[in-house]
Length: 268
Image (cartoon, rainbow, N blue to C red; front, side, top):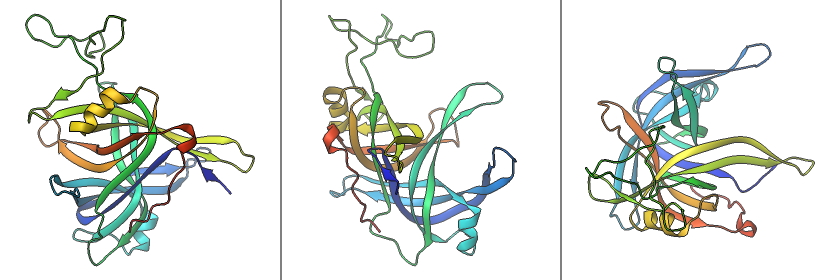
């Protein structure tokens, strides 16, 4: 029997279908090019509220679901209330016009049901992964303009020992922010006891306030962490009608090798 290792990517969502389904892509047999499965995107409106009710969010999120599953539900249409368990995936795509690569993120449904009422949890995501990037203090020239390298990345300020200085930024609302990336790998232990990687995602995330400073000051790159939060949709800066989908992490904890077990979820 296959066993899962440290890598974890799972979420729970419940909300109303506001658009869809729309065809997204085919899964084909690599040898015969035969279509194995067809995937569609359904847009679902979900809500999040923290325990102190100081943070609320309503977002419309894209959910990838197979045609087989939709058929088993008798089809999906606007107004249906769905309960979804799944993963938050990051897909690397190349723009055919510009040739530049960019990341597309989607919720990949593993279990979908039509329900009569909202469940207690409507937008929750959990990751076990490795911190691969975070913010560092950036250089500004005499005119106050951010300095960038040849690849368009901010030039970091170095300390006396030549190391980058972990930092945070302020957004337009004056909130403390840290943008970071987690490497989330799905690994299994096969019947021979060997660890095999099924896939690896590099998922852009964001954190605010104390969690943003925690990432900057307390968590080194390549540290294993457990993180949880919710998925948010926000307008893409400078692109009218386009949106960014991102995990907002509200809790993150570094873990030791011996503390890398996966707990069973009890959410429904």
